[in-house]
Image 1 (cartoon, rainbow over the protein chains, first blue to last red):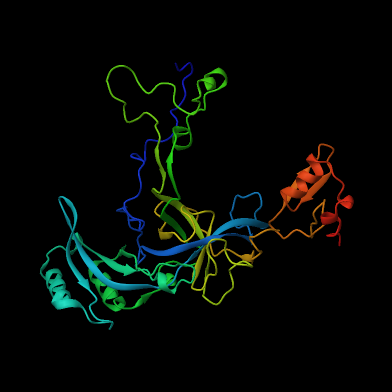
Image 2 (cartoon, rainbow over the protein chains, first blue to last red):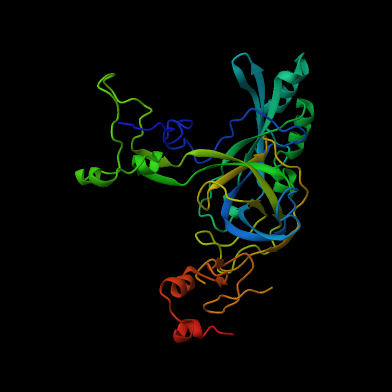
Length: 328
Length: 57
């Protein structure tokens, strides 16, 4: 019996809370950031550290002072562009119409006349605005020292110019390596998408945040459950009732992470003794302010920020902590 | 200004450690929760402890 009114525990916004379909997360948004040729990139989470920097937020109490800021390091080896795909906007949504794949190793070898038929289709089209192009790129986990896996993760990267200029850029890129510096620069704001840490089957207290029953109710031997899961009728448990089940391993997006630094491969970022459960960063990396969903070694996708964010310049880093993360 | 742990006296790296202000206004710095617990909860004297005394200077 609820005696007081209070908001329900846990958000229903992410229902059903089940495992993500794939560890290679998909960026489902339709919004594109204007003026950016490529909408995203991908990397692997290496770990966290802290930066010492000069605070440059205009209304901050510590403006101009040296502050310590937590940061996440994402290792971003170059991605390989293996193809591109043409989409047409129809009354039923966006539909893929043509795709061009790299067949051989050489940069310009594209399979079986696909490129010419794609160009012919675009040539014929009266309104080119219904078309959009997406790059098909593969991550290269084999060049990351910390990752045991060798299988490439294939993903689409949206492009956001006119189709003609996108196509010209895609033709230039196909078969080549795409670097993180081609997509973001220091001081940019990005959104990060990843699959969160999996926690397995958990009870309603951890999964939904319901209260643990107190005092005498605990003597029944069951304290960590909801008091009532519904009425006699309807004679079923409704889906809104907090119950046990899969927790974690969901796809989540966090918005507005500031890119503090983009580092090249020979710059030392790895703390003494390596990142715990990761090891050494051997490739290019980006440093994001704050945290990122998912455990270490997880694939992280970054894309340009679509929500309003402050317009700030390149942050003035004073130091990056490379202190050992094991023991004192 | 370089801070040192109020218990074991090792220098604190910038951006790490904890500042603790007593009710009388005394400011203490701790490098770890181990030092904090030893000083505040367990009320130990660092000079009597081998591991803390050895880290002096």
